[in-house]
Length: 133
Image 1: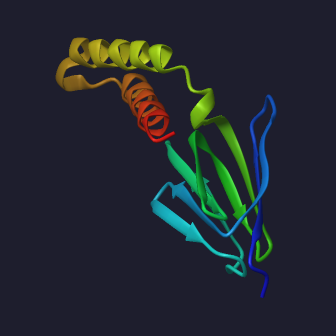
Image 2: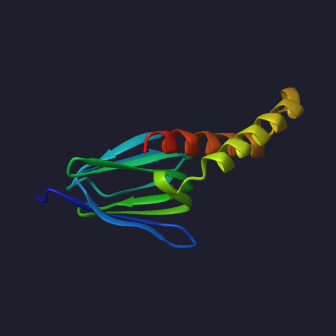
């Protein structure tokens, strides 16, 4: 069995990651999924969350929002609506987005606002990932 697995993360705009990893953690719609080389094939829907992967002694992190992941024994392909490496995240912009989302949720009251909830989850994840760089 190989010691690494190929990881490719793609958004509609660009190829974000093309790397090899020893371990990958993906935020699936029903929970986090850990992937090692030789993993059984599967396809899963992504949630808003953090993708982390280990290469040697380094752990790399990305913020991701929505999409799909295809896991094969030798390759993981992630097609995401948005994905940002920790070092690419504009913290001030993410904080402003979080504040806007929180204000919209306050205005919505008990009826809720699904768009604001999604925006809050995405901004919070971006801030968490940026803090770990």
